Structures are given as C-alpha cells and as structure tokens.
Length: 568
Ligand code: ARG
Image 1 (cartoon, protein in one colour):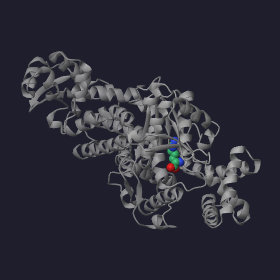
Image 2 (image 1 turned 120 degrees about the vertical axis):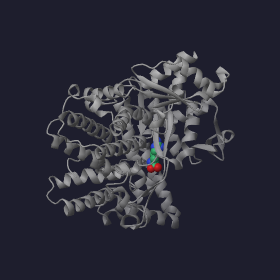
Image 3 (image 1 turned 60 degrees about the horizontal axis):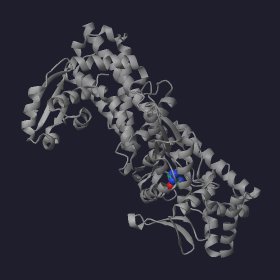
Image 4 (image 1 turned 30 degrees about the vertical axis):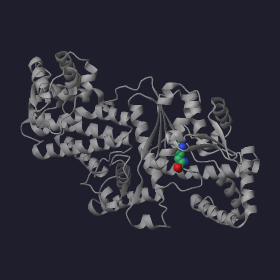
C-alpha cells in the first residue's frame, strides 16, 4: 500500500533539510478529516530552525510541491495540513485488499524476531476467575497478532503449580479423599479440601508441619506425593482446557512454576557471584531499596524458594531457549512491583542485552461484575466456564424468540455469545478496570462484539442480494469519492497501522476500537448510499467496497479470537 506518511515525511525533510525519519515520527493524524489527512506540527522544528512555527509553516508550504499523492497543503496555526489524493488512496487500498485476501496487513515486520508471551497462567486446584479470563483474552489476541506480523511467537502458560499449598492439598486428600468425587467438579472439590485443611492447620501446628513435609516430599520426588500432585494438575488442566477450547486459545508450552524447581540453584549462584545477594534474618534477598523497589526475596529463612525465584529461573530459561527479543508478561497490575523487581534483578543473570531490554509487563486492569446471578454465587467466585455458557444461552434465547427458523442456531449463538464476552474484555484500554455487565456486552447496537458481527452479517447479505461481486478492475473509483465512502476507505487504509500499534503498545484493545470505527463508518456509508442500484456501475463500486469491509472485519475479529456468524 502507498505509504503516504512516509511520502509526506520525505517532502518535509527535503524542504527543511532535516532527517526524514525524525520528521516522519512527528506527523499526526488530525482529529477531523476537514483538517486534512495528515498534519505536521511545525513547533517541533522551532528549535533547530530557530523560527516561530507559523513562519516555518509558511516557508515549508512554499517549498513543498503537490503531486499524484498529495493534492493540497494548507497552513492552520502552526500546523501544516496535508490532503492526500483521494483517487490514489482509493485505488491503493481497494487493490491491496483484493491482492492480500485474508492476509491484509500481515507485513512480516516481525521476521527474525522472537517473542515469548506469558499469559493466562492460572493456579492449579484453584478457580479460573474472571481476571484470568481477561488475561487469556488479551494474551491470546497478542499471540495471534504477533504471529500475523511474522514474529516467531511462543505462548507460555506459566501455571501456578508449585508451593506449600500443594503440601496441604495432599494432606487434605489423604485424610478425606474418599469423601469427594474429584472427577465431577474438581475445582470446587479442591477448594473445599483446601479450606478444610487450612482450618485444621490453623488449629493444629502438627498438621501444618505434615503439610510442609508433603511439599518437601514433592520436591524430593516422593512417588505418593508426586502422584497426588499430578492428579490435581491433570484435573485442573482438564477444567482449564474446557475454557481454552471454547475460546480457541492455544499455548506452545505449559511450563509452569514447578518446571523451574531444578533450575533455581543456578539463579541463586549467579546472584551470589554477582554480589547482590544479602542475608537478612536467615533469608537471602536482593536489596532494591535504593531503586525504591523494596527487597526481592530469593530464599526464605526455611530455605524454600519463592514465586520470584521461579520467575527469575524462567527469564534465564527463556532467554536461553527462545533467545527472545521480547518477553511479555500478561499479568494484572497488582503484580507491578513483582515484575519491576524481577526485571531489575534479572540484570545480574548474564542475559543478552536485547533480551533484558525486551522484558515487559503487560499490565491489565481488574474485572468486576455488576450484581446478578454470577456475581453472588458462592460469595465472589465466578466460574468462567459457566459465564461463557450463560453468554451462549442468553443469545440462544434471543434467537429463539426473534428468529426461531434460523439455521445452525446453536453454532451461531456460540459465536455471538463468546464474541460478546471476548470483545467486552477488550473494549477499553487494557490497563483500565472493567465492569462486566450482561446488558452492555450483549447489546447489538452498542460498541460490542455483537455489533461488529451484525455489521459483518449485513455486508454478507448485501453481497448476496447483489448476486454479483465485481473484481477490482471492473469498478469505477470515481463513484466512491463521496464523504462516507471515503471515510470507510481511510479506515480500511489504517488497518495495518493499527496492527503495528497493537504490537508496539501491547494493547489489543486498539484493534477492538478500530473494528468499532470501521463498523460505524460502514453503517454510515450504508445509510447514505443506495447499494443495490439500477446503475450497475454504482452498484458494483459499492458492492466491492462492502466486500472489502466484510473481509477486514472478519480478519480483524479473528485476530481477537472472535468468529463471525453467517446469520444474525
Ligand atoms: N499464577 C499467577 C496468578 O494467577 C500468574 C503468573 C503470571 N506469570 C508469571 N510468570 N509470573 O496470579
């Protein structure tokens, strides 16, 4: 596709005799299209050129010539506004969409780069809660988008499968295992056992001691303890897989905390050798007070390791085995301090500079539910598989009422219900907290998954009604020069750029917002223009544009993990 920004950057650079890359990085997209397609803030050059912004603007305008790409340049305040040639962008976008098919924007910018994405990472024998759901949705979208951009991407589920709580679980199971049917409702039953044994531990120091021993036995490879522990893992994973299966989420590795149990000594040795490990009341710590990051506990006074030690071992392992350029940790912002500590301490592990610089905590906000059945059930624990099922059931009920003869009702309801939940998790910038509300998530007219799916289905039915979808060479681009068609075209043009932004900001909500914008622009186009028309040239042009919109909506949604229904 024609890179208008680059063309403009080069023109300005030539006129101002400054480096083109720097100039291009200052170019903005104006808040409304009346101000042009691109704007250059001249104050950025005030220092180097030693002139006031309006004078710079006047001088640059004088020197910049219009051509087949740029049709007009205007001065507004200290800005230089550029209007691109609408025929040029129309041709470029519409041809590219035909050529690229469902690979639009897959530009291979990540070729030769390795990215590790640590996401979902629930805890064994504990519920998979709505925070983990948001995590999974964000991480999986990033995973798909990085892959799409050509990065060599590894998705890791860093399971919480280690720690003294498993010693407790084993103790509880040994005592009361025969009272439970773990196959039936494993996580609930595990929670029950856990609460029970925990209470007993509080009363009886001897039981607590037994639990500690059990955990030690896991570490030493005791067959009985390891067997029970593995059973809990398998049961939990089976439960988690149900959710991953529904959401279409996959991982390349399930190396969780336990995987690092034999890899932590090396971390301790390296920190020791680097001279950063200090003794503190029998524990070994790295003191980060001078950086305002408190202390990072590496070994407790009873010699056991910590969550942090395991994460450090994981950094080392991943640097070695994946040689990563980026290692992203999709984890709630509550763990901000933890990751700041890890990234700081990791500087002592002898890892390549590129990998150290590529460590990034992708923090996201909390999810709350408005009151309702799901939020009050058993206190605060919301079961994610039940939530997903409820989304599907609610949609199925609506279909049953409004369109009982629809084909493949259940399949379509599944796509819509899951799409609604996935989209809702991405509907605001990921760092913001989120309230989950059924009425908002399932609203077909709001800024929701179902709305995007609805617009997509509309594009399909337009194509069906038209009966004929032309090829690019057959359409007359002059017939798509009205404002609402052009708004759609500009938005289509931005698709690739949005994907690049998702990767540079690690925020897939940018793509979600983009799909809303494209859907809204198409709806305006649809309302402003008669598509099925007696004038077949007009019809062909509009049908072609409709096809392009459907294609980009579908590609974009699939990168978020959302499937498109055929009917709605
Ligand atoms: N299991 C942790 C939790 O549920 C998240 C682990 C995140 N990943 C990591 N490498 N620390 O809170």
